[in-house]
Length: 107
Image 1 (tube, rainbow, N blue to C red):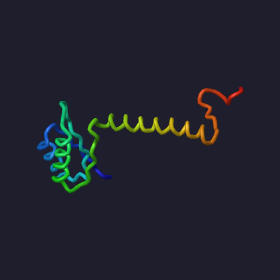
Image 2: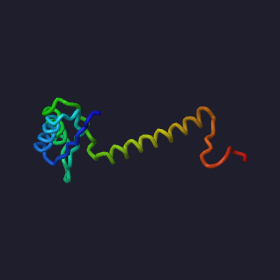
Image 3: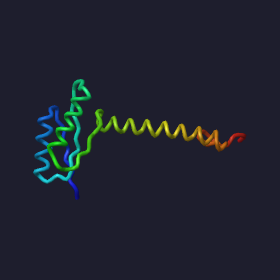
Image 4: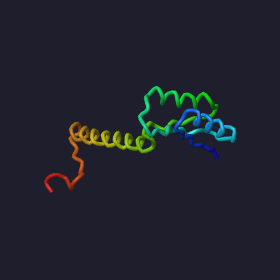
C-alpha cells in the first residue's frame, strides 16, 4: 500500500527537511501544504512549493492556498453553478420541465 506523508510547515527550510526525511523513510509521495497564519505573497508560495519539489524525487500533491476546505468549497461552488446552468439549458432548449418543487404544471 502506498504511503503518502503530509508536509506542513511555516518555513520553507522546515518543509524541505520534512520532505527529505519522509523520502528517506520510504514514503511514496508527499502531500504538501503551506501553513500561513499571515498574508503571503504568491511568489513566496511558489518558492515554498518549488523548494519542496526540488528537494525530493517522489510524487508531490499540492494543497491549494486555502487548504482542503478551500478546495472543497470551490468544487462545491463549481458543481452548483454547473447544475443550475444545466437546469436552465435543459428547460429552454429541450422544453422539459424539471419537477424540483412538486409535480408537472397543471396538477
